[in-house]
Image (cartoon, rainbow, N blue to C red; front, side, top):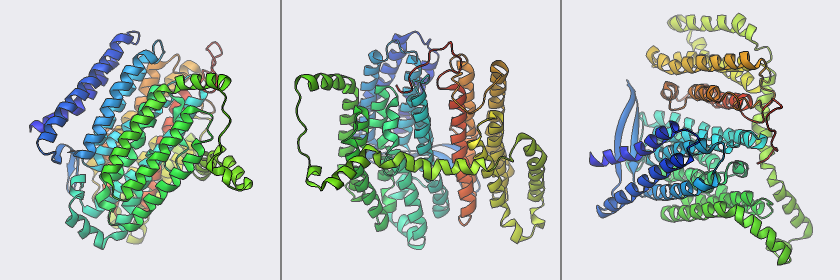
Length: 624
């Protein structure tokens, strides 16, 4: 019981610090940084004390079930905590580096307009990081995962009056949503494989794993590949590597703590946590190893031709993480943990001193010029050498590949749905929805052949709406309304599954309704003040309406199923009730949730962030 209380303290200290920092006046820099410094410092000291106690008692693996958020027949959503050597290493590295970066940021960000905002977001990130490393199951880990995702977006877009930081924040968030796809689908299939909310401690039970995977080997491979996609997206492995240098548009301290040391290594943490699941799946281990090797080679080549020191460090870090992926695939857990700690400390140091290094190198090239030394590539035929150089300069077109294959394709589909207007929504789709409700209440009389296809059909209608919302450029109210209606279609689709009861629907939709109304009121109020708002450009209205922007951001988080909303539990409930043979329904539902998150963040960014539309505000350069 004492140990469980300590775990609560480790989570509650960052929560207390974050809440306290919100109510401090923004001009009181000394108090803002002092609270952040004190909270992180106390947290680090408490961890060191606990580590001594834990090691002296034989460093046991600790696992306990904590708060049950929702329970029904055949399903239980609960918070679970786990502490072992993996947690210990990540906790030590995370707490120490966050403490150091907090000290560094105190002076570095002096007199910045977003001084308070930076430390608020830093403490919120630290909370999410602690939830992830203490997580004992995928559901708990997903809570911290979502917090890290929104904190990344906010810190990359820290210089929110500039174009490129906001644009790159959107790019990074899109890749993070791909990681969310993998994690959501892994949780979905895990529910059906083990018929419970399985914990990481239970994965260490060889008999349990072998008994299930012997008869469901393809399901095990599917879960493992989804976890790999999630880890690759978070840790900037191929083909997702291009987001990491784009994330460097934020302040140097956030680049160091996020994309040099902690956040970018969370993918490795996920692989280590689920190692027992895929350790006997040779094909999965080979894929992880090959992916890590390919990433290491490609990102090393790209890093060597970068003109920006931050980009060079970013790609170098991705290269080292590729090697860590290989170590994890080979089963070298201790080596992977040591490598993680070393890479995290090195990249943090390099990023924090990068401004000084740049000025130093500029001075050196004038006074102590050294000709370029021969490299390994010089031994290649010139055509091959020049081809590799050009491909590296263009970053192997990884960024354009992601846009061409994924986002541009989705936008093209959305643009073909121009018949989805506000008038048509109420004239055609509301009656169709009412017909769907009638079918739901009379489903016992519907032939089985028709009943089988209704869930996928209704989910497809919801997906069409969110695709149109993602591609919408003119009417912001239409885009917001389509997202809300998408959730109602998803709820209707899953309701045809017998074990999804109406009280669970109400739990899911309660968060949607509240967040939807709040967001609609914010947009209407802003439109009444500013007269003209659309999604054709960035308007930067956060300049003059910061409180309205904050409330609208909370509404967006509520619609995305962020942990502050009952929708978070509701979405997990939905997946637990999608049958394991309903692949089409699972695909349509997942795409709906992922694209609506992108559409919501896009609405927030275009309406409230970026250079201000009014000419009497300062117009900064495109890049930071």
